[in-house]
Image 1 (cartoon, rainbow, N blue to C red):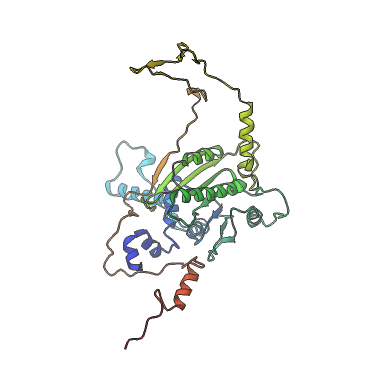
Image 2: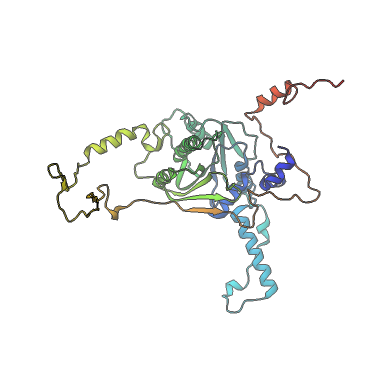
Length: 399
């Protein structure tokens, strides 16, 4: 597909090039920040599955350069708008004195870099350099990545140490990683869940209490199990769908805030979620100690009738079939522990629709991508096609 046709099809693809972002996914992080204020009081961040670096680019411009996007930019625009309205209509009768005039500090537009910022980006693919970003080429599913990450966060970390806890934990861990989709949704959802599982285990090693975790998920029929697992470690768990994320896509983002690990929990990639591969043995051990209960209503084999018991209601239809309603022996109703994660749509409704096509303005010039892929998986295929003379081989000479 040509560049101009893609510009028409996807407004965020065009805006990313116009505003200098490496990929359109930068708008997803910005819209998540508008809703959840992710960058508040954040100076130490881990970006997992970072290539080509659009989320790291957002972190670099917000934390290191001090630019305002997302929630901060929205609050600044809102304050200026209120000041302009008060200047036009004058003081509001009946309003409190502090609400009469909203002073906008001229220095609000100045860049305010944050102090002691540390950002580490990890991916299997190489990432082009970004100002102030430490990049690692590593596999987040491998235990050997943890010492590399801890050493990047703290140069004094002893790589031979068995302790996999960060001496200076981070405030935020983000992950926009996804597998190469196959089109088989069940398989894609499973592989994505395993990637998220690895990102979560790595985050548990470096997050400080009260920290935040944001990651991409694929919504499926068993995604509620994932929410329940995250709820063990975080006080707040939300599912968010940014407006820049196509509605036709099953992707969403899990936003977890206020990291509160269970008492006695010890994070390690060798023992995922503190349990590792001992979960099946632990469940079997628990079942062995549970009491065995049998229903109090038994069928008499001689009469094929049920013994009467008023606590179990029963009914007999015209065919003589008796239906008995047994109580649920698993747990009483008052101990119902089901929990549904809130689903939130992020982004201004007046923003572009990622599934719509827009007419290009007159005189529009299609721009090249800000950062072409450094090592795309299709690079070898392009080289072979070029050697063959094009997509369909070398063309013959015209007579």
